[in-house]
Length: 306
Image 1 (tube, rainbow, N blue to C red):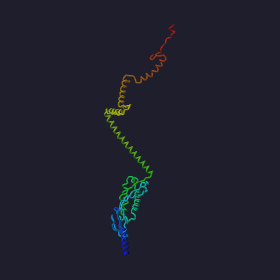
Image 2 (image 1 turned 30 degrees about the vertical axis):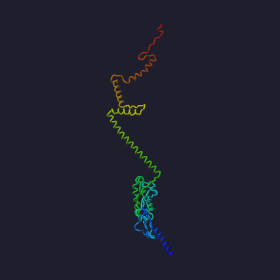
Image 3 (image 1 turned 90 degrees about the horizontal axis):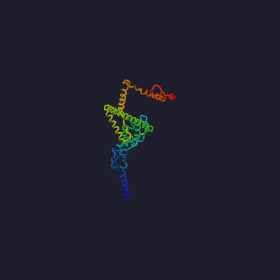
Image 4 (image 1 turned 180 degrees about the vertical axis):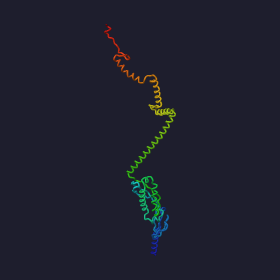
């Protein structure tokens, strides 16, 4: 009797251990691939508690979440012969657990290797400007290159992005000089365009003032008001050029009646008279009066005594 009880207890313990070993819990983000005598069942196990046949079934859990895999930096030479170092980020997830576990030994390692080779290939096919500014097309090309093998492995590529592009220091300096020269060129063009527009406006203003002389005076008064508003002790008063021309014409008109044709003296006569003045002064120094034909006669005192 005691032997039977012991056998029952042993059987119960073995059954409990077998039951515990046959129960598996599949999480929400996982799928279970069951192998029965080494053969895969048709459908993967959904989330929840699952009972397996002891010593017959084996289950492998596959993560269905999106995997973020950084692609190591890859050195390459672009199509325009520039040496660069590029790294990227790969986002993918498993859509077919059976293929991901049966068709490929380690799908994550396989995706990493394919991403590295595809990144090297895309570097050699692209220009430097495309790597720096036109990355959308490169992302699409990388995704297309990775989707071809990933589809056969039961993996879906969500997106691929180039994270960083490392350039040599010499190339960075050259690009900085190029950008500086381009900005300087644009600044000079903008300045020249502004000068051209200002010249057009000034020419229009000059034509308006030429048609209305009073506008020039009003502008001059406005300038005086603007200068006086600064509370300076010195007032700069602009002198119109037209006024100088008026004085010039008036001076020429006043010089015309006194010319040789009107009976007046020649303009050079005052200069001749001025030139004769030193000679008359010299004669006066010798006892001669200016304007006389003969020198002054001084009487002898001895003659008057006689």
